[in-house]
Amino acid sequence: MEDIFDPTSLPLSQDTFHALWENVVNTISEENTPQGLLDEANQIDLLGQPQSLSALTLLLDEKMPGEIPTQEFANPPSSTVPVTTDHAGGYEFELRFQKSGTAKSVTSTYSEMLNKLYCQLAKTSPIGIVVAGEPPQGAIVSATAAYKKTEHVAEVVKRCPHHQSSDNNSHLIRVEGSKLALYFEGPYTKRQSVTVPYERPQLGSEMTTILLSFMCNSSCMGGMNRRPILTILTLETPEGEVLGRRCFEVRVCACPGRDRKTEEENKEKNGTKQIKKRKSAPAPDTSAVKKSKPASSGEEEEKETYNLTIQGRDRDLMFKTLNDGLELMDKVGNKKPKQEIPAPPSGKRLIRERSDSD
Image (cartoon, rainbow, N blue to C red; front, side, top):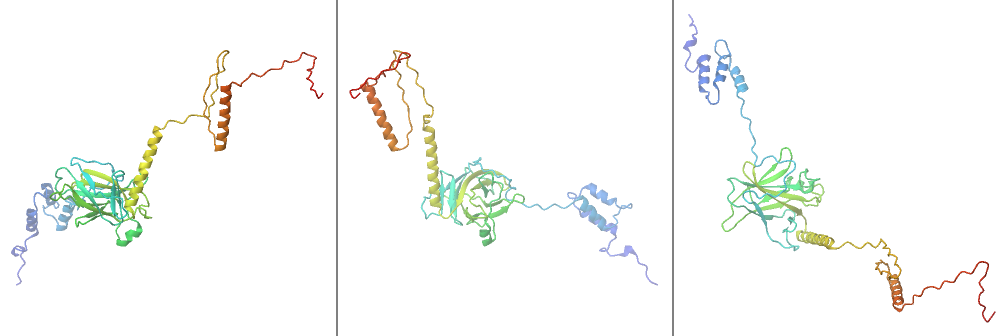
C-alpha cells in the first residue's frame, strides 16, 4: 500500500509558504520598511497571507521606489548669461600675471592698462592665484570663456571646426600640467568649463600657479571670428558655491607682443584726443556779422575788430595789403568829405566850363 504524502513531513529547508513569508517579513529592516507597509502587505489576502511573491514585489515597488541615481557635478549648472564682474569675496581672490614685454618673441603677455591677455595658440600662459586665508577643503578653480559684447554673450565659445577636428575636442580653454583637471559642459546651456583642485602655495611662495592654454585663434572663421572674449576664473567650494571671481579679456594671436603694443598705443592716442577736446575752447562763430552802432553826432565811430577766414595765400596777401592801406589812410587823415554839387534851379542848365580848345 502506497504511503500518503504528508506536507508536514517536509525537511526544514522546504517549509510552508506561510513560514517563508514570516521569514521574509522578519528580515526586512524596520528603518527601510514602515509598519504601515507591512500591515498592508499582510492584508492582501483575507486569510492574512499574500497570495504570491509577485504581489509582494509589486507592493514594494509601488510604496518604496528605489533611490534615483544622481550625477554629481563639480559646479552647478551655469546660467545663460554668465556674470563677468570681479568679486574678491571673503578670501580676497586675486590674479597675478607674469611681467612680459612687447617683444615679438614672447608667447604670452598681459596688459594692465587694458586688463587683457595676449597669447599664442596652444601656448601655456601661467596665471597666479592669491587668496587670503585657507579656502574650504576640496576647493576648486574653474575657468570658462564668454563673449564680451552683449549681442554675442548668449552664444557658447567653442573652437572652430578646423581646430576641433584635429583632436575631436571642442573645449577652448585647457589646463596644462595637471592630471586632475576635469572638463564639463552644461546640460542646458552647453557652456563649457574646466576645473582643477586648488592647491596651497608652495613653501616660500605666496601664490598658486595654474597653466592655461587656448586652443583656437581669435580670428578663426566658424569659431570666435574676431569677437572679443572674456575668461572667467572662479574659486568655488566642492558644492559649487562661488567664493571669488576674476575676469580678463583674451586675444589669441600669432604675435602677442606686437598686438599688445599696437592696442596700448591706440588707447593712449584716443585718451589724449579726448582730453584735448575737453580743454579746447569753442571756436569763435565767424558766420554771425556784427553790426556797428551808428555814431552819434560829435562822437567818434566805435572801432570794432572782425575775424575773417580766408582760403589761399594769394588772397590772404591781397587782403593784408588792402588792410594796410586803409590803416595808413586813417593815420594820414586823407579821408575828405565829398563835395556835393548843388542842384541847378528849375528850367536852367548847367553851363560847363569851356576849355581853351573850345
